Amino acid sequence: MTIIPKPGVRPANPRFSSGPCAKRPGWSLKALQNAHLGRSHRHKLGQGRIREVLERTRAILGIPADYRLAVVPGSDTGAMEMALWSLLGARGVDVLSWENFGATWSADIQKQLKLEDLRVIAAPFGELADLAKADFDRDVVFVWNGTSSGVRVPDGNWIPARRKGLTICDATSAAFAQPLAWDKLDVVTWSWQKVLGGEAAHGMLAVAPRAVERLESFTPPWPMPKVFRLTKDGKFFDEPFEGLTINTPSMLCVEDALDGLKWAENIGGLKALMARAGANASTLAAWVERTPWIDFLARDPKTRSNTSVCLRVADPWLKTRPEDFQKAVGKQIAGLLEAEGVAFDIASHRSAPPGLRIWCGATVEKADIEALTPWLDWAWATIKAAEKAPAHA
Image (tube, rainbow, N blue to C red; front, side):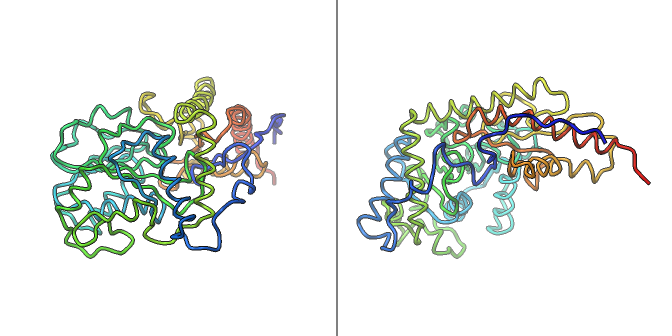
């Protein structure tokens, strides 16, 4: 078998996972040394830490002053389920779905909430659902950035300023990397583990006045688990949005979130975060453009993600191989690079077409993307050489 020479430079940080994502440059456990540990999170110091997360988040993202903001359990998934269970049912629902998470929300609305007036406006992986089909007299649920497909909405212009229904947006791989149209979004969710490289298990929930009005005027017909409750005695439940979380948060994770937010402030805030993600994605895109064997899963450059960049093997030779080989090709590439300590967790999402998914968010260094690309070429050349080698008796 032909031995393919290995590149001479390795990424300084091989962590390209799409969640949990790489920590910010220079991070160490010393960043957590002031964590409020061994005491109640409801003590004034613990509450102060949580409120600081809310205040710094609001400032960096430019969240309107009249939107309520909370730390909630269960990561972005918990935040989205809380919104769906608490707010849906008053109107018909349109779900825009073009990847795994949109499909998850539509399935939960249909199978768990059992809403009959549900329309799913879907598109296959790599394409964007037809945004023009969304009816804003109804509630509209969508992801801003498709984490498992690398396809994002281009902006918020497709959402009318005047609408009867609510817009509920899963923005977990978009927040801090893409400009969100806050005036067009009634509920927004995300987690700490994406663009700021925070720890998992905690979600963020931003609620606009229109959503608060819905909460106080409509009571869903299904039983509501405690961790999903956003009302108390028919009124909006203020406490989670004032630093008194519904359940006990990890104060280590809270401290880590604060560290990420302070880093973001120090490098220049949201503009700097978006610029870093954009530079990383552009670096990867330049390699794709000059590399025949690889291509983007997202077909339209205008709707291509700058964080969870999804790729497919485009070499025609691949189609000549057995189906099981084609399905495993992304895992093969990822496995080779993990064994070399060059890239971790870059195989495509388990529900996505076979290929690669490379996180280009703000905590990733551009130099590491530059160093990664020759290794991707090496991995593919090595796999092809092994497949073409004659079998030995």
